[in-house]
Length: 237
Image 1 (cartoon, rainbow, N blue to C red):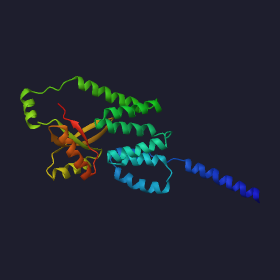
Image 2 (image 1 turned 60 degrees about the horizontal axis):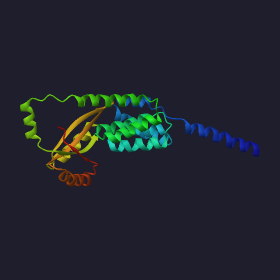
Image 3 (image 1 turned 135 degrees about the vertical axis):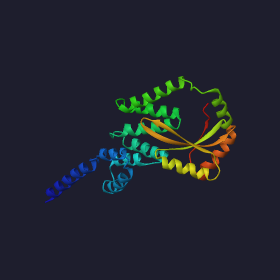
Image 4 (image 1 turned 45 degrees about the vertical axis):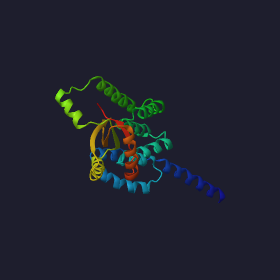
């Protein structure tokens, strides 16, 4: 009787460990997201998380569905730290790299790329990232052709040296929402697109400042008031 009881326990533990080690196939859901069906996948994700609370793949899927870039990076970072051997770990690192690259934080992006290269040397995302950086370097070598009167007009209309990068969003509606909220209070805003590795980020820029001190004071205000994580950048010439 004792032997049978012990055997039953071993049998239960074995199959329980197998069940918990099984991962959810999220490929179909990733394809749905590519088709623009993010809302439908989000509804499915909530159900899947309840049924499979230990699934690492679902954490990555949640990151993909997270519209706020900063929150998504936090999810990806935690995912990589907890599940470095997961099949989506290199994809998570690449998405972190893409976010920082899109924001113009090239030094931070470079460190993430180095981490990706060291930990996952066979990842196809390394080539994608390097191609993006090569394209940027080539672009910087070619000065834009601007007609003299157009150049003078731009200098008159945008006579400032610094601005604030308030945020970057995958979903354009979120970027427009922030832009609209700031503009409603008379704050200058503009929105530009940056494409990194096939992902388009909608970046919101706030304010025009002649010196960095002015920009720093305003940055503190909007970061506190709107719960942002903005940064000061120099105006592109």
